[in-house]
Image (cartoon, rainbow, N blue to C red; front, top):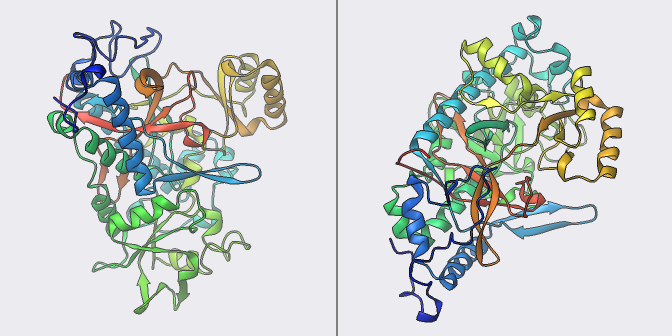
Length: 498
């Protein structure tokens, strides 16, 4: 299964007979490796890819990696890192060695995510409606009502199909032999454009191997997203659909423009929209046109200065009233952030049991709530063993990885926890699975996670794959691009499990 597209390597570049790019690869029995077993042999579903990689000389491998990087550069695939004094735009780093999952493992993940999204939507419909789960004490009422992302304005609002969360990006990790949900991203989950860009770049680099592995496609994501948005529309025929972006200076603007093009919908800013006679309209070169469905990539606070932050210049005055009257659908609905709060996350398994009468197919990571006295005491006593996160932060910010922190850093963080315990949760430091990456010209293991994307409207679907994030810094457990992480393509392939 040849990966070469340049006629083969020069004799001086070829590997010695019988040599493998995995000969110097370090396998640590303390971590599950996604490609090789404890003896260093490729797992059954990875053998085709491993064989193709073995046929490459080191020089060919490096050139393949450079082709992938150039592909992303030419496509303008970037992200922005915000610092104290400036913002820096960088090309999104993608490793050229894909991660593979057998279909049997993917089936488990898919079922678990569908179950989870269904429960989260039922929870949101309940807490903004009758509030049964709060009155029963299954989830603490003060935790929900006191969450900064709880929106009292949403109480009693009719949400189309009760689909509060139409686009979900839950982060899945493997520790040992078990998959777990690390967190849910329900407000404006990002990363799908990088998933599609990774696939395009890697498929070009491995055309024959890609075909030989019978990789399940992800390219239909745009069509599926459009179907979900159409299913939410208050009008049946030819709904007007638009994607609301904060604008070109937003870190995810590339994704906003990419998704608007993929779905064939309009890309708009707040200044392009207005409210007139109870409807949301957009300005176009052909005059005003109605908007029936808004795929918003703007946070709740900024969508309507009359309903939320009065100083917002990003939203549309009166937009929320149009939504409240049922003349507009929004994905995702305002107020969904209460369900991806890192403290509320601890109760998602209870939500699944409460609403669906089922055990979670994929469980949570063990979580200690510092708002509770036992959780606070345990966290402070075991700070050198735990990962501590601020409940409202994302992107790898506002967290402490205890085993990797200095004594002074832990002491400083402990003071923050004591000052505001409700703002923190703690989890064990997981032995996240690893996968080979081409770094400094050779294969090296790095920790990975997976963000699949779930679409929920009239139906619930999971695109087979997702964004596989990788901690490119040696020893790091933080996969966020803003913290030195990157991405891999992930192939869902037919074949035996590990």
